Image 1: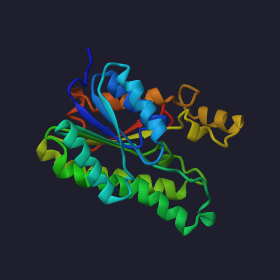
Image 2 (image 1 turned 120 degrees about the vertical axis):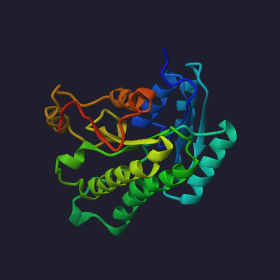
Image 3 (image 1 turned 60 degrees about the horizontal axis):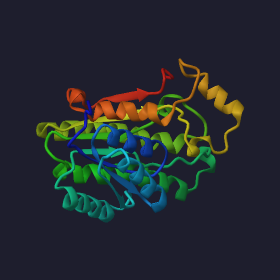
Length: 246
């Protein structure tokens, strides 16, 4: 039985990678899915087409989540089309691999603009515009626990997301909205694999209890459960979807 039939779900950064896998899985569970993208319209349209092939409604909406006016417009567009938003999944984010000493002001500001302010912007809209008894899922990362060089500003952004999530869960709980964080470990996406040697990938895989890195569908299944009605008593939590890595 499809667990998400009737739900309207907005997934940010859903044109490829984990976001696309999440959008596809939610569609497979019967949800109407809104695929947000920043610039890659073709990839977003491909994700929408794949969801529609499942017999589920989907649409793509362009918005840069770091810009509050674009986020507001995105919410306006989705609510005008479907009447409400039941679930917000904040997947959009970027990672720049640099030592702290080599990180420029622009590098730092860009990561915080998308990863932190982008999540803040969508949660601020969701605070009053998400449907009662809805769900918010924010994305952090298991790298916050691993202390890996070149991840400094990135894990700082994800630490900020984790703290905002806990506070937001208390702020919107009276409306029946639950709010959680999902923290993937290393996952087999084009973005993650880029520039990594097989030796580096094997080393990361060895940190998992299953001696492999994750697949996007591993993460998507966790998200699908957390946005279902069966997970409504879970809120303010950080779920490590990392194969027992940390």
